[in-house]
Length: 302
Image (cartoon, rainbow, N blue to C red):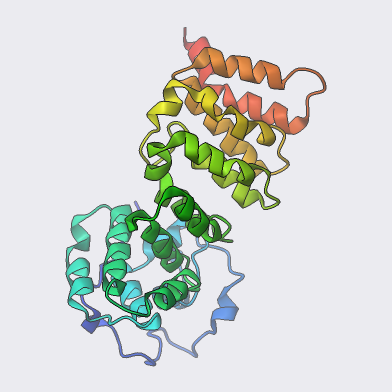
């Protein structure tokens, strides 16, 4: 069973900045840890890695490391590093209530506390930039979540989220599309139009964002009722991706269609049949096979 670490609920519980690490032996430089492989279990994460994660010095490399982070310690360290007061009442109140929330919701609350702390500051953009370029993937994810709190129009939010959609870390990229999901659901046609150029972008991460952010059902997010009912509205966005060379993109497109198959199975069968005509690229064959997995499961069960 995976057990979460005990949360630090006050920044006063942290050692002073510059204090030595708690593990024995010489301190390891962050560069020494960058090429590591993630531990198979939380209990196997080396103390030096865990300390570097909590200090905001390195990014996580797997889910175990993400779950092992002491969110309170990391929040306090990152606050100090980006120029915020880690002892601010707003942040302290948030840390004090983190244990009452599910793990993923805790991140949303920390991101909101950082956002609120910068609201009255003239250097807010500088703080945002420091957070968005932080070595910790978790800190960059908080920066992406700021977009969910802002009142920017959809077009501006998409321009702002672009850097996070292209982030080298998978966790930040996931947070990126979730940060703008509600706005996409609220104006589907505008979102599809704005994301159309993303579907042909040279970066596979950007192409995958266009598909993943508009999935009719998705994972860990609100559903897009308009695309559940009328998935064909998203077909123009999917067409350029039907033979994408990236498996990362292929899986997202297949999942998009699999989502749609749960409410419009006939349409998905028709799209897959159209894409399969003529000379079938291996990439397309993979997509149409995965796209119809739920349909096959239903057929086998009947």
